[in-house]
Image (cartoon, rainbow, N blue to C red; front, side, top):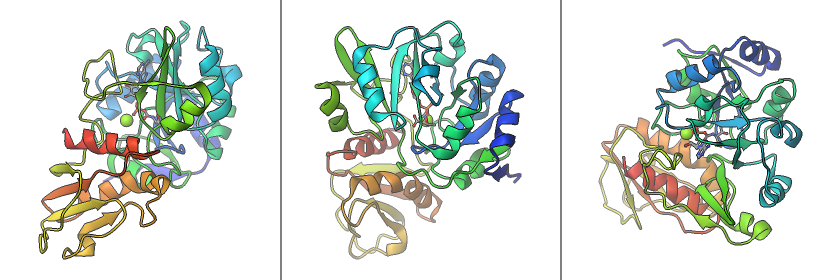
Length: 318
Ligand code: TXA
Ligand code: MG
């Protein structure tokens, strides 16, 4: 298998992007597959490389609110307060788009998803670009998102010229997507910024039910984030001693009577941040084990636990 060139050369990343090429980029949430968001050809190739349906729109990334103002026609008060508090960070805002953003980026929707990511190498790259980067997670459509350069290389290495390697993604789970309609604030996708933290800044928000596969509520596709092996989610995993054909994803302790080699524990300290950080990497490891199926247990529904359970549920719906 051919692997992509990997390194931390910001100039090479910039040159590739300026020429209309794609570069895998590190972010604090997950790795992204980035191209010039203002260049329709580059955007089209993102959809092709990911094998992603055109009705699933992309997030654009930039490094300052000043630049964001070139791409959105309105920035409501509540959005501003969230941006002030949480950017750069794992927060994506849905805002009405200006016409410079190609319809291809938003799948024809009037709003564009915008985020200022919190990763030093990426922020430096964004600072040197005079266009925003459209970047979905750098995985084939429907598979688990990558949280390090090796994950990207394993699946998309043959298809992209360069991976900007910024180490492991600290947060480990995609950004929280927030939109504003009438007077309501709506969470379209649970993610790396906890709902509680958002509510502390702007008050009550509404959660989108996560069952929809309606293209008008993209980001909500049920079958996202799935491993290849049959995957089951349980409220609590009870030890089935001696079952060596199953891989287990557990919250804070091993199952007794099952080989530790087939188990991954998200956080022995019951720490939700650590659990989110480990989630996708552990799912990949379990998927690669010589087991026939994977069983995961739901984590407590607090803080980032909501987003973790959301991803597990979608994986199980595959
Ligand atoms: O943390 C993240 O958000 C990562 C990193 C790379 O920034 N990106 C990411 O992108 O997760 P992606 O494409 O895998 O997921 C973005 C989700 C999509 O499911 C899409 O449907 C939703 O955002 N989305 C994008 N634009 C939208 C819009 N205008 N309205 C509603 N949903 C939108
Ligand atoms: Mg994705």
